[in-house]
Length: 409
View (cartoon, rainbow, N blue to C red):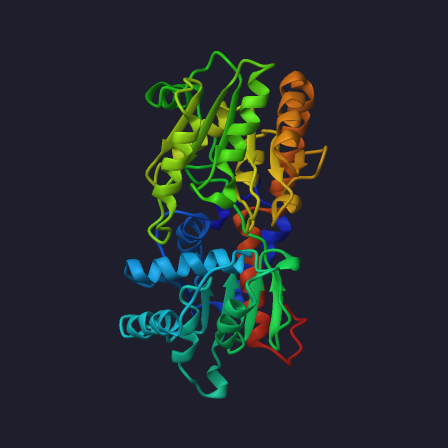
């Protein structure tokens, strides 16, 4: 399967993956997160696991189960780690641990490498299988969110588990915390061959536009993201309203539900109320597996936004750039790593700044085309799935051979 990426992904990444897999062939690699659908983590794992299996790695993906009380707590924790002030009780933390304790009974945690994604399953480190030194396993905690300025007490509680891992992996260097374990930076990625990113025919694009009642007779502004206050959908509508005074255009806000995000429906309703009866604002909640529809919408768009006010990485930016679209993003999280300001798009700090850049792009189609072409090449060299596989395998291999000379690779 990895051969399908030849001519698309950088040759050096493919060669290094092959060499690493020779060293790791037959070993087991377990990923655990909190949902199989909705959000970038699930999308990446859905594509990565089969590729790893095809490379000779015994790769598995499991999901922890929880009830509404558990996911209300973890959503609150997600927000607190990104800087919100939240109220907690000891009972809530005890229940968080208890749900993880229950899950370990249904999970086979015995693997050569275990990669735990985000806070929800972090306490599973307490149930690590202890092996003889000759068969040492590696446990890695992967944080996908911005914890650069967390609520102190929440980070303190989570840190009790994190420090027991061999390694912590962050998406952006400024997210990393001072820890007594090894830390690595691995940026997320997109799969250029998935339904969300593969090339589409004009008839496929038109079919989606017709089915979703998206007009094609005026410029289209698009934001694809979960309905989350940190994604600032209200700010996007306000930017659109400023642009609308000068440019006849339409706005599409599209998201998908996630089983580990209990706030989504309430925020969706807030956004619909704020949009009012404007016929040029289209708010769509699509099923998590409607990847081709997202692909088509991104290809229809003239300008794509990711106007987050807090962000882990914001992979919709790379998705849009892969379609050769100019992107406007908030100056937060991993967005400035993806957008080279003035080259592949624009980084903004306000609603007014977003509106100004939208108008600039709409008025300069040649500039927009150049930005799109540069953006696609930037994604090719930095944010494809093959590069992330290379990085995960490298972190695993380095931890497995800690203290040894691994130059022979």
